[in-house]
Amino acid sequence: MARQARSELTRQKIIAAAVDLFNERGYPATGLGDIITRAEMTKGALYYHFDSKESLAEAIIDEGGAAMLGVFRTITGSSSPALENTIHGLFVVADFTRSDQVAQIGMQLLRTFSGINAAAGRVYTSWLDELTAQLIQAADEGDLEDHLDAAGVAEVILGSMLGAEALSRATAKGTDLRERVARSWELLLPAIVRDESLGYFREFLDRESLRPTRAAG
Amino acid sequence: MARQARSELTRQKIIAAAVDLFNERGYPATGLGDIITRAEMTKGALYYHFDSKESLAEAIIDEGGAAMLGVFRTITGSSSPALENTIHGLFVVADFTRSDQVAQIGMQLLRTFSGINAAAGRVYTSWLDELTAQLIQAADEGDLEDHLDAAGVAEVILGSMLGAEALSRATAKGTDLRERVARSWELLLPAIVRDESLGYFREFLDRESLRPTRAAG
Image (cartoon, rainbow over all chains, first blue to last red; front, side, top):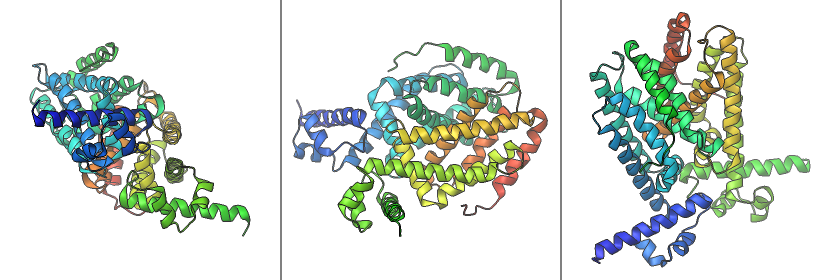
């Protein structure tokens, strides 16, 4: 195996061990020593890739964030109307944060490091850009009310999804995330969708809410 | 000084030292040893009150959460209409999380421990109960649309405030929190307020957004 590929494999092994432990004990209670033991690695090998637990957290935030955005983009890349893609895509991402451990721990670390390190800001910014682009397209397609500022709406949508995830995680271990996402959209739709399209998107949302939760990815 | 009062004073001194350090370095990077040094205290004195850094975090989440809810209740206790109190109260709480260090660090720890310890769930539940009560009163006062489920709306409002705080903290160090709260309300109002009251509440929100930020508390 080429040196670079081996190095990347080691890096991924460390990340996998860290994700496991953060999942079992939470980030704050996990020590770098625990990660070294779990990854069956020397201290030197770990420090070659990550100089601290926080740099490991940053890597997981970036990887989890990229994976979630990747899942969303597989939906928004389809030729359906942008607002349908956005609604459907955020449900699929919600499912993904429950079924994929890196995404789940990435979300947890994103909350932990909001305002503390740059990775959280990077992930949020990439999501805001993506949502804003979708909303601009939805406006072009005539589904949104005229006076809306796409970037402002993207912020509120992202904020309400993040809040739904935090509440669901804290009060129901994430099991009711889909219902919370649906309730957020129920309130957001009348604020952003043109009156003529509102009936259609309410039905679209109802049908989306009723789809069985599948493992995405 | 009575023994109990002295003990409470020690406890508060430990909490203050921890809040200082969490503010300077973040929770993950702060060790119990740092807190003992900063509080100018023996290890034994700290362990008498808190058996781990996490139990200290729980105490700060509870204190910060209670302080924020206390600030909100000074507003909702007034005789103004419940929806006005709710809107105004959440702006005041937003200001408070920026001006009060225990509230600010409490919010940070609330995000960190969502789904990890019970304190985060307790704080969220107390907020949901309070918001639901206000919305039931607002419905009685005729300001809300008829079909709404107060508890569901309370969840979405709380979620959007939590998300706004996380985004503001991560991308602007909290400086634009007031604008984000205003944008969330702009989208929530048409979804929850009766058509006849919508014009009034939009103006109420505009006036609220323009008030200069004062230190609350």
